[in-house]
Amino acid sequence: EDQVTQSPEALRLQEGESSSLNCSYTVSGLRGLFWYRQDPGKGPEFLFTLYSAGEEKEKERLKATLTKKESFLHITAPKPEDSATYLCAVLSGGSNYKLTFGKGTLLTVNP
Amino acid sequence: EPEVTQTPSHQVTQMGQEVILRCVPISNHLYFYWYRQILGQKVEFLVSFYNNEISEKSEIFDDQFSVERPDGSNFTLKIRSTKLEDSAMYFCASSVIQGNEQFFGPGTRLTVL
Picture (cartoon, each protein chain N blue to C red):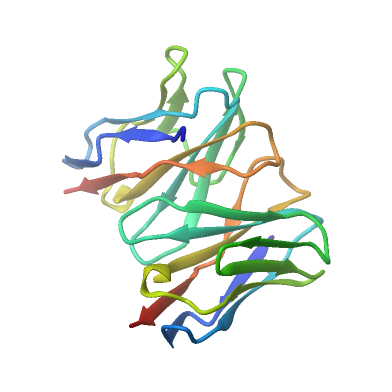
């Protein structure tokens, strides 16, 4: 069974204080790893797709990286508006369709 | 920017009643999905749908659940006889092709009393 574990569960940062969120996974053949942002009471908002180890994607203050066992979401100089829950999900070789999600990391950025 | 829409945003129902949750996927997408998120828990896959057929479903998606694409734009999830444990946020998603990123709607909060 595919497993996705995110750490930490919650993270508090000061504005401008860079950090990283971790997503470790155990799957039967990774077909894709996806990062989403979720605001309270809203649907997941797509951020990045990573397909192979060594791949990196960037968008504004966020950068996602992928190894064979884990992915990191690096947040550089965060702002209060970056506060949200960040979700990691995997698509494995056992399925063409089903995303398996982690529990997420609740990020709070204080001004 | 195209987006997935869902109605209603909140549905309250009595245990044992039937509910239909509606979704309009992004117009050029071919693959459609339903997920649910019980308060404080992970987002969980329910079902995927392609070419007017269920392509995959989870163990959660039992005989009480059904999906339909009644016309060229809508995608629905029906729960025949709701239970208290069906209370959750239900998200519709769509993707252009399988294996690509899935775009989620804002969700329907279902409360079963």
